[in-house]
Image (cartoon, rainbow, N blue to C red):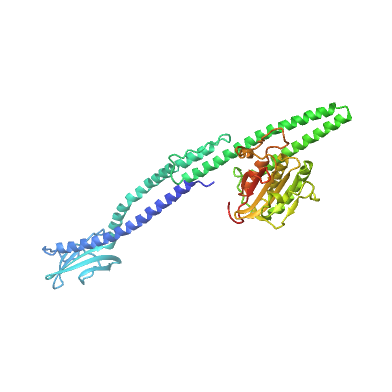
Length: 471
């Protein structure tokens, strides 16, 4: 595992070290150059200082100096005779060229400055080795403070990096201490601006997780409550069947047990459909890429879905019809009654396709099936249920009309809640149909609205977005 703190520290140390090295090298050579200019200036000033002085020295050769001397001064008159010589240096040239010069004396470089004044020539010479040694010592004295400061800079960087990453460690500790039962948001007060977006995203994710967990717990609690009653009823009906002696009583008990099993099966199927249709934004797993939407014929999906409801509608004498295209006048259906279509599949007028984009084509039949199932269960006996699909300016639209009692305006939002039934016990519904419809519609970015049907009951409309455009 890579540590961001270690990476920043090592990078900072390397940067500080490289900077110190570059500054040291630049300073060293800069001091060397300045020292050369200073030493040349010193040679010139020494020659000028001897210009007005009377100097004399024995002209006999002197022994060489046992150690390198800093300066050697020679003075000649206009006749070329030596007037003054501070030291004897073997190989010192006798010719004189005015100004600065660098010559080789006994294999060693020397820096010379010669000055002519009146009938005299003054020459001051200095070994280059001495000059370089003095310049190097001066350069090192200039670099040493910087080299001594480098470790202090490294310590300062180490402390600053640790201090700067303190808020990040605090956030990490808070996230580590979160409990699944209480996903409280992370305190974002006092955090640097670079960390605030991360904490904001984490808090948004925690909020979605809390919402998903709350929905899950509510779903489990409601499902357990709803399943308890049919299972208890099945147990009672089974006991009645066991105690029944007469054939008629046993047949009646068997029919009731079969009806109870069918209600329990329907409830379990609705629960599974709702679980599959719920949004998955609260999932703690890796988010998978959404599959591309598939273009399907909404009319054919509706036709294949309501086939499953034909038997239930026939049992109540309800006519099912499927229309495609613009809405027909209400009196256009007045002459049709139950059983007017010989096929068990509902009648379908105007077979032009109505296309829409679906990210989950298998869920669209479940949406239509639940709408038609609700219309049949809560409609009146011998009534009508009209399913219509059509194109509109906003996109494909699905409409389901029935001629039942309808739903009052003040209750039209509550019927989308799970397990909500306006008249418990009067119907065999599970109270999940419209909740499933809304969940599937949200996955398709569609809008579900309730209104009054022209044939007297409830109208449910599902408006899908235009193909290729968001809702």
